[in-house]
Image 1 (tube, rainbow, N blue to C red):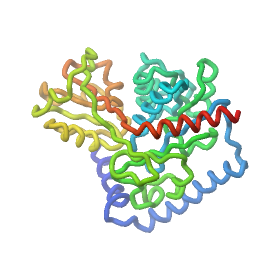
Image 2 (image 1 turned 30 degrees about the vertical axis):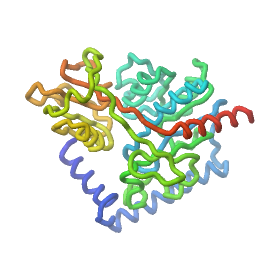
Image 3 (image 1 turned 180 degrees about the vertical axis):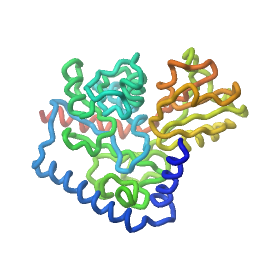
Image 4 (image 1 turned 135 degrees about the vertical axis):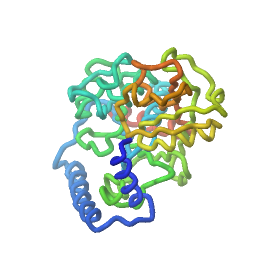
Amino acid sequence: MSNWRARATHWLEQRWYGAVPPNMVLRGLAMLFERVARSRRADFLSDKRRAQRVGVPVIVVGNLAVGGAGKTPLTIALVHALSSRGFRPGVISRGYGRAGIRPHRVSVDDDAHVAGDEPLLIARRTGVPVAVAAKRIDAARLLLQSDDIDVLIADDGMQHYALARDIEILAVDGRRRFGNGHLLPAGPLREPIERAAACDFIVVNGGRAAPDEVAMQLELMSAVALASDESIPLESFAGRAVHAVAGIAEPDRFFDALRVRGLRIEAHGFSDHHAFTPADLEFGDEFPVLMTEKDAVKCVSFARGHWYAVPVSAQLPDAFFDAVSARLADLKGNT
């Protein structure tokens, strides 16, 4: 992460999550942001601007706060759970950071610059149809034209009201929650905090979940060599010096998880969706380099033998997946 961006991020996070209150300028801008956010949602709720339906139930997995809350691992777990229960899911996404805006059906052989890092990861981990587009409604239509799908999962897009949704799953960072409760830029929220009450399910990633929330834990899996796909136990790196690389919203979450597993890491944090080059991963030694899966899909083409991806698995109670499945069954029964 560049020095200026790191400083700006630290300055904001002190106000969003720390003891420093946002100043009057930030609070004034937040009031304007809130007015726009409320007006936009009200327009769709009142049919002043009509949300578009696509013919199958739509599940949106999103968040209210900027930054990571585990949406992509949650989406992957949801795909697997629904598939095992007889559904035929597809996934749509904006494909943040990809080149181009045209709708694109993601292939597992795509480059991340074409598909976006998260959609490519989802396609490779799940094997289900995945499409990206600047407008998620266009991605939905592309999939429904070419694939046998009976439910769509939108990875992110809680605030993309142009696409009608039937189930909303709110992902929350269990450690940071909603920060100071202010909207951008005075706080981390994209919408007022009461928006959470309108969601069908609230999934809390780490930390403590309330009785009406669903607890999710992210577990590190084995390390997978980028150059050979060989999988080795993560414990084999315990006690060894390794480089840990993360270009995600909260790099420290990945670094802390490696430390808990006994790894002695030198941490290298990059900005979310960072476009990696070989020079980014040259550290002047031959110590193993461990990175998130999301980063790894952008590094495979120039991978070296001592670079590894560390997949994560989202652990959620079966009762949650059963409840989502039951809601989908009700929707299909009412059509």
